[in-house]
Each structure stands twice: as structure tokens, then as C-alpha cells.
Length: 178
Image 1: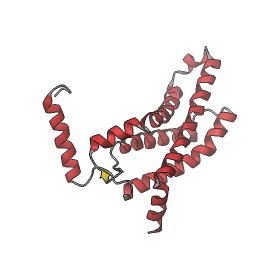
Image 2: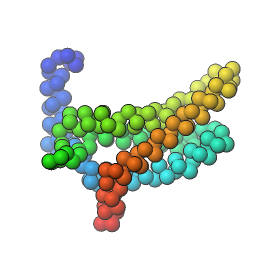
Image 3: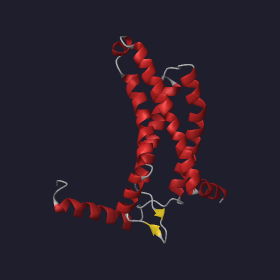
Image 4: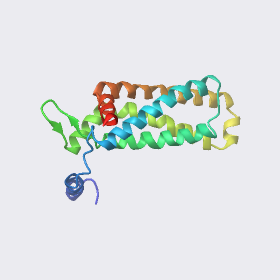
């Protein structure tokens, strides 16, 4: 099936309906799964707030523990980006559970900042696996690029504001108290 085929839209609706009927989608923002993800995001943000200034200030290479952390971070934030397309939200009158409306709202709000942050993780990983010889000719440019990518990770802290603004931090606290 191709996207311009009318059956494509119907097949998406069927998949969406099956997942919705099975209770899997949409994800509930106050549900256990999102609460666990929010707790993990806070832990990763705290670790990043310590590790990032250290690695930028002393130009620590992304290898060993830092490489593993970057992989974990990249995988986690990528799944979080996808989960945000599938998490319902509270509209002005009622909870919005239509996956198309959810995706549209996320695409028009936090998607680009989230994509930028996730992209920095994957760019750091890609630079690590770049052949060493291709780095040496332009070592100064490479260092500037790595520092720039690490500096862009500061955008991740915007996520803290997002979590706090949406009240999800309070929801996570209430989930943990139960």
C-alpha cells in the first residue's frame, strides 16, 4: 500500500482502532508507564546536568562510560519522542484520545525541540564511530563540532520546564507515594 492509496488511511485507522480497543493506546499521562518514563527522564536529566558541563569544560572524549550513557540517553529519548505522539492530553473540555489530534498537537508544540535534543545524542554517537583518520585533518573543526553538539544538549533542560508546566512532576510524585 502507498500513502496516496485510500486503503492506506483505512489500514492506519484499523491499526489505531485495534490498539485503542485493546487498551494499549493512547497512553495515559498519569498512567504507570508514563510515570515510570517521567521518573527515568528526571534521573537522566540530573545525570546530564552533571556530566554535560564536565565533558564540555574538560573536552572529555565520548568513550567508555560516557559512550554508554550517550547510547542509553539516545535510546531513552527516542522512545520518549515516539511515546509523546501516543500520549493523550487534557483538552479544554475533555481528555483528547484521538491519535491524530495527539500527534498534531505534539508535532506543533514540543516535537522540534525534542527532535533537536535526540539528534544531538545520535550525532555524538555518530561522531564517535567516524573513522579516526577523517577527524585528524580538521581536528579544530571536529572539536568545535563536538562542543557545539554537546552545548545543544542544554536544550534538554527545556524538558524539565515542560514536565513541570504540565503538572506531570506532581503526578509522578503522587504515583510514587501510592
